Length: 328
Image (cartoon, rainbow, N blue to C red):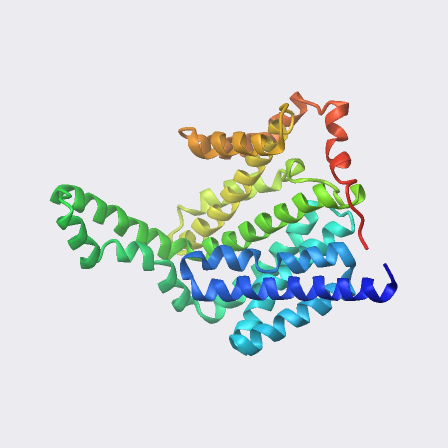
């Protein structure tokens, strides 16, 4: 294939990735039910471009996607796409393409999304609070209650449900800032995991770097947990303490999940089967989430992963998977 033909093929691939990203974001605007998920993944095709062909071509494709959204949807939509979808995906792809690993990449993207969440919370706190309580408030409304009465739900059960959602609304009004921050962190982890899966199948082995299973926070996180719990006895700082506890608890949950993933990687079988095992243990086993949180908390002292060192053949597993492709 001549250089001119290679250039045409690359331009076509970049244009296709740009249009695919723009289409995903447009679909997120048109289908609110899937909006959050689609916004998370809309920038991933452009992140793959960065891994496959480098920064210059990825920036060219990004400019095409931004321009397409500005023309088809609106300039505001293109700005939102750039902030929420494109920039995190490029940060995740750039860090992992340098071999810095999943954890560093997720940290970069999380820092960016956290800064956006902080600006939004400072400038539009009341609007965000209303959005956060919209769901529990709907389930207390007359429309939902009338529907439940028509379906034959007993009045005492309706009262219990209404009380539960009222309690949820009061809790959300307090911890919604932490919830928005956690949402950004989850977005970074999901997108980073998908890009890492792409590297494992198509990228050079040097891109992989440290994975999620190596996540371990220092003792300072336990100290922060104790201080936040102690602050609950002081009413003036109680809302701040609740938000801090949500954030710290989420981080402990990530550390516990890293332990589960660490042991799941030592199972024999395909990658999809191991992922299914993790999902079942965490979300389908009764009290699985609480056990994961406790594992993350006590891992600071017990270091659960040292009980199952990686076997030599498993140590090279990811490297072997990453030798199937080359970065242009």
